[in-house]
Image (cartoon, rainbow, N blue to C red; front, side):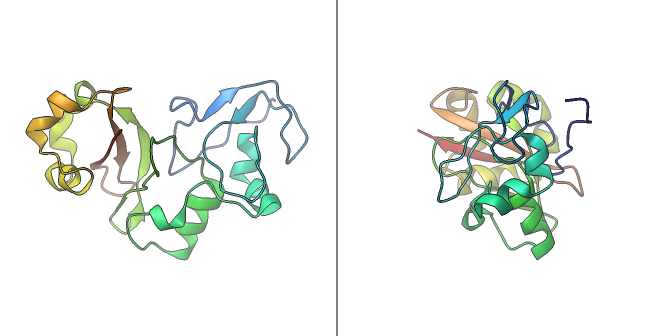
Length: 176
């Protein structure tokens, strides 16, 4: 497809986070082979696969299947109706082990940056807004324990978020 790849404010690199992959599948929404397919979570009555990123970005996928890409009950705190619509209907989700959580800061959803382990964050601890609170809130770990438990692709996975306003980092942790 020669059209510019869609930009997602709350998930800036869905190819890097591997929820959108190169594919020759036909999108069930636009019936086009765009070269990409969404492989992340989609909450709808029907089991829908291979949605193209353009049908996510323009809202046609969520509209056609009365579905969402995020569970609105898993958004950390209240956000505006506009941003809620953008996040759950126009933004690719991410793959978590259990129920994904979407973190919020400065009154808006944060941008999902990617999956991280200790090695991916240890040199950037000063960028975190309140990593101690994030660790306690999302699995009861202390920061000093992260080097022992938090490994990208391991049994304790980190999900890195960045505030779209102040650019501070937030961390969600999921242990399997």
